[in-house]
Image (cartoon, rainbow, N blue to C red; front, side, top):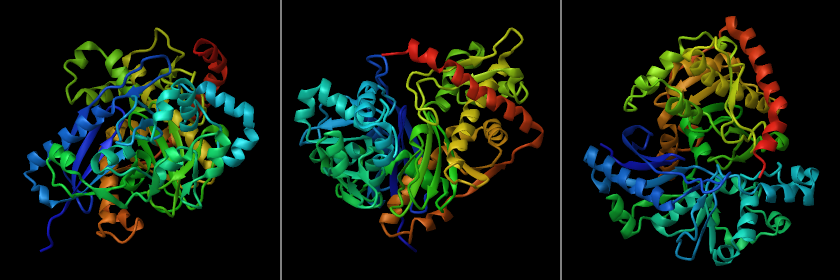
Length: 508
């Protein structure tokens, strides 16, 4: 009988971190979740305390180990899947010099505009594949150099969430290919930092760590971190990757032309591709896949499940909210089902904290269009589901323009547990939606499979598809095609009509 070996996979998101104890086939024995906060010290700013990440990681690791009674000697590796495009300057010891500037932060809009004025849109689209926004890494680094020059000068390395956690675990400074590509300064062909782009943006390449494949063992757990986690010093630490690449593995959509939709706090559509493609004007980009031979065509929306949570916490009837029981979201699904598809003409715009694609716009905000006294709670609840799905259709439209032709999307993330939401996606997008088993665990499962590949338990990234199972399928219903076609056009028109208003109201 083969010896039991396990992976501790951490799915480190915006609202909290999950630890999952997985076998080498990605089967999850136990998982635990801990929350941490996000600070918004100024308008358009969003920061997190790295100690909050670490506290959640160590606590949840101990919890899954204690719950299962697993011997620490049986844990063969630790790996992280994390939120991307953050900026965290650290010193030579890996100590943060300031709070982490996370992906949601849009403080660097002035720097992004300056880049466009200096280099022109044509040049940027040619060399960088897109136009920068205030949420991107390059403008944030320029902001740091301009507004916190002391911190910038003292910085030994610029890390992001995954690279910080790897460093704190084993002492190595390293980015995986995907995280590096997310900075906009990665050379896909050379699999290394692009020296020309650093020169173009007047940034110091010496402040960036080395890069490595996601499945590479980059170090071993140091004594201190091992004691905090309840693991054995010397346990392998793998490079890991960002949330989008690990979720891709966890979705099983690993062959060229296969795509998945993620419904978590944010949302995205990602398609595995053999080459990098971009539509920079629409914020649709390519990043390196966890598989170093592939790329991910990515369209991302800033608020998906976050809209649902906002509705639950602010607009749901108080008698339903109660103590925020585990059945809360089941109840809200039931309320939304009181309304028919189309929400009685009510449209929800899910742009609650700006948007990335296909409308790169940090000033746009959410709202209800056509709200009247005729609408009831079911209409309002369903419109939130539909608004997120309609924006998903807008992203899909952009992705299709770049060559995605499949009629099936795998669905992952916590929102994918909702039958109503997945049926709404199928109807609104006009594609078959396949829900994977335990969709909320896809990030952790994907990270665990990446580490298992690094341990030699699998032959290739393509072979990891066999570890992912589909638990349900939702087909578009012809009876509602006309409804969603009409709603979609109105949805897009609402942005065109309101964008200048939002730009004026939210300028700064």
